[in-house]
Length: 88
Image (cartoon, rainbow, N blue to C red; front, side, top):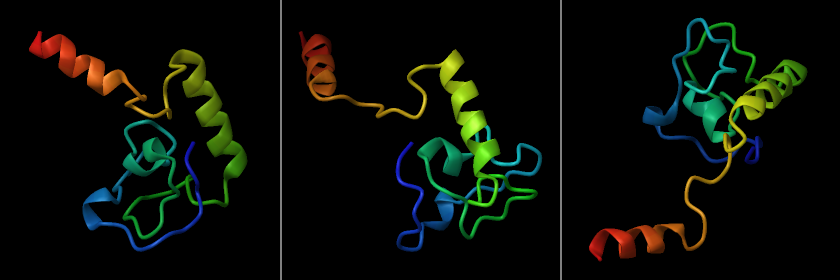
């Protein structure tokens, strides 16, 4: 995943509100982006830096079923080749 270090304050629209997932499922926008939950309105969070073993286990489990999870969505050249195919 991307860096988990705290950075500048995040946009409120990019903060999660997870209630049951403990923020270690892909529908948590912070977890999916490789960010720790900082300033979020989540409940019983395991993506907070204090539950690193559980967080890393969740990432490992997800990568087994989806090897492309947590990777860059656009790779060099992919976007350009998509545009060329569409416009051809």
